Image 1 (cartoon, rainbow, N blue to C red):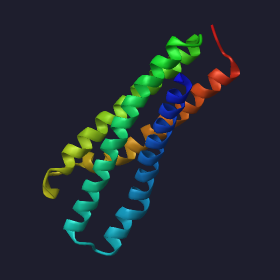
Image 2 (image 1 turned 60 degrees about the vertical axis):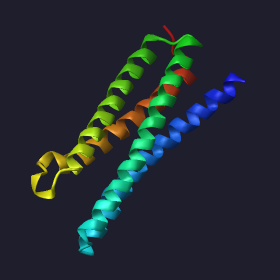
Image 3 (image 1 turned 180 degrees about the vertical axis):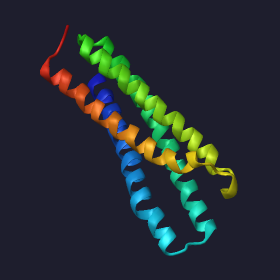
Image 4 (image 1 turned 90 degrees about the vertical axis):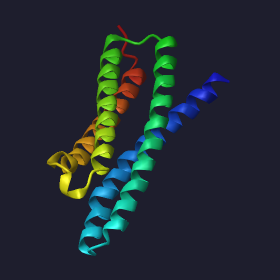
Length: 151
């Protein structure tokens, strides 16, 4: 029965990461430029940003819960090597950094437009880059397990 819960947690983790990263790509490369080209009302832009922030918050919660479960599941089960532990530690640091920056971004978004700093416009790209790195590290972790790399 535990394998069902583990598979469910893996699925939740992958879907939440995909929604956040994929949504960020669409938001930055399609939605924001479209709003600018259409000279959209500030209220519309603000509402879309707020809806996207809510989605990101849901994804962050799902990633934290599923990630903690998956870490304990993997570390308490099969033997893992030093390489796995190192890559996992880097992934955790990258992921938590990404989430912390998303919180900062949300705080900046609450400021008036005139009071937002350069950080407000730089953070989405940095968050996306960290998300891509976290995804690659996740794939690397799977590869380490599949290759049977142990101490």
